[in-house]
Length: 318
Ligand code: SF4
Figure (cartoon, rainbow, N blue to C red):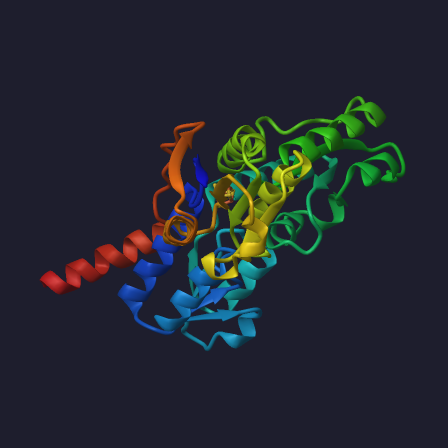
């Protein structure tokens, strides 16, 4: 068996920043630290933080007065931010800057009077956050079919925005349909689908056709991981989304000579290496890493965390 290991894979700059922000917050203020929704959509990461004193909540009402709450990488609606401030909670905002960029575009389009067609998946944390910036001006478009039928009443000017983790191909098809129906629709100034999503999708598109089967490490609620599995599948390669090596069903690999292996943007590298070890031990696999794009993106920690850490250092030296 031969493993073709995609690069880039796994953690993106936004996930690295969010995880580091939570780590530093726990270290500085001590447990418990409350996290609104999963810090990133990965079971392994969430379970590890639970052991260290993070408490994941679905409502701010679960955070006691004076508590510290971390907003996840996917962002939150402004109403939640206001609620947290009104309750005097200490807020650590670990929203990925590339998600914040889409929020800013939503605010600007709404101020300019546009109705915004937001391309994304209903119920996803990021979509809830972005829609919250201008709920009365947003219409969700989830598919090409919806782009063909979405009803816009009156003489309104339109703009569109996207979730950061969509399939590039699906989003292009949806945008093409919208432009066909509404030629004057205004596009965002730059691509909303983020660099990490695009690069991981491009890597899978390149390596999957050379493989008999594809394995994607990531959790079932990770949008960008699901898209990687779908891309391999659409290329005719049987593809499986797994949380860890423990979920590999060896029946998938019977008689297969080559495996494309990648990981979603929220999946830790140690889980990829566990899978590699499993395939090497069980099937005598050889490993070839295939670099499709180099990545050097880095986001600095949220200002609140930098301040907390600096204050703690000052106290320690006083
Ligand atoms: S996948 Fe993209 S938008 Fe999401 S956290 Fe990573 S860099 Fe940010």
